[in-house]
Image (cartoon, rainbow, N blue to C red; front, side, top):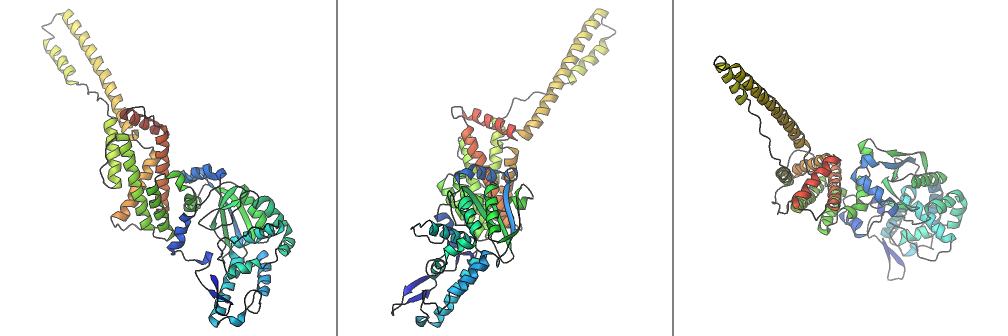
Length: 479
């Protein structure tokens, strides 16, 4: 929304785009903006976030859940004040004399949208209290609302009496200053970026809606406790609960993609693959889940090619994801092959026994004794050889189950990557939904994290064979 000067010198209203929370999920330009602006995750949360990305079930996630009250508390107070202050007859904002009927309709639409923000947007609540904070501290810096277009919308919010708000909600304001605004503070709270609350990142998993649902996630409990107390102080939530979630899977994984978007440059280092990953997330956000899976499959192929060429020092054939995985396993079998133990031949022993039986009458007693002792020795040796061979078979069987370059959990995730990739490449009837796309991203993150750790562990002074054998041993231990 912008305002420009008409020929008569008065403001006219023009619409440039929809207001923030009410953009549709198919507006790709909005999604691309996620990646044009660097999204900062608090350093105190980065290590925990990376642990969550690699294994959400093991790490768990903190959640604040509550019933949101759209028309109660501070929203009711602000809406009353707002409706009194802002009408077409209020000349301190616009002069209705110079507005066309179309402009008046648009003005009322803007007003309705701002009213929706007051009822449902956490940004507006945070921004109003932050303006109160700046107003009290006489901070002269220009403060524009995050996610609020400049123009008349901005003018609406500038007209509130922030001193009166501080007086009416003293407890909430003091809590805001002490536990929310102190330290780094960001109010760009939407599903594309975290809010920074007193040095910790929180994410809006379920933003307030008319049905009354609010879910906020974090890597620790403290910021959620502060938010719970703050929202209770302004009478905006009911029946709040805070807990650490490890199960069920849908609850643990529900904020996965929004968290991935804040840390993926810490995991994927290659600039070209970063672009491809951003494309995958864009497709996910626009609900093009098959395209998302296809993009992740391409990235997975690239990483398996890196693994093949780094360890085997040879150019990897340009074949599909599943075929590359098979090639890696075949190469591992060749490198890890051992000298086979020959199975002992029992026929020789039995043949000698029969010979002695035939000659028994013609051979002297002392010769029979010597032959018997010799035969016993050979039978004993055969028994030992048979036991060695049995032990060898047992070790070989175990070796075939465990001698892999990849730990078992990574092998399983590669299997998922191959399955979903094939489902999109071969036009199968498998339906790719948000869940499959989310799993695809998760499996990729686990694979890349594992490979990054392997690269740190490798002693590059060793030869190729020694490096591979140590990788196998290391990952057998981790399985």
